[in-house]
Image 1 (cartoon, rainbow, N blue to C red):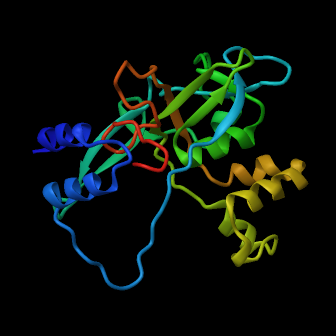
Image 2 (image 1 turned 180 degrees about the horizontal axis):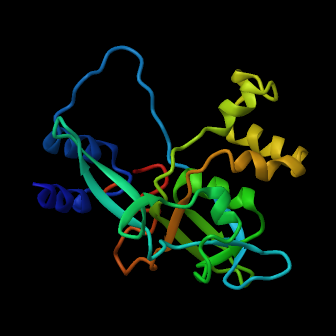
Length: 226
């Protein structure tokens, strides 16, 4: 069982390669995989921010709106999917787009905190989680809470179609660089992606718990290990 394997792992001497080999040979079945394999990593962005609006930090980061409804929809083949929207006269209509939210569609909803600019928020939303460094030196970890249900549009693809970037050059850094070089066009570009992610503030990890960003199972991820 997992519990027994975890107990055995705790008993293995740290730094003992032979003990580590015995542990894995005892508790795991090794398989050789031929051919090319792709390994991916988890990136957790860190941006500066503030719990209250200031002259520097003016872009709001929102939690899940109360009027956002998630409904399970079953098609003719019996396949289920999630539909997100808001109720208007009893009907479920599409939720506000990024552009509408940027223009104040959420009304009096109080933001979780504030970051320096819309690009910081946008790339936090792309990753789905991240850390916000506060002026007093402390940090707040933001975790994914939900999204507005609007379709996702890749900005890199748009920039390639417009001839602004070569397809081989598309990356988070190149997109951010284009926004920095074209500040008057950055907002319009981001609003071409109507998808909008909402966050929740993740409580600090309790003693003995993994303190990294939460993975799919809700367990904190650890650098170079998870």
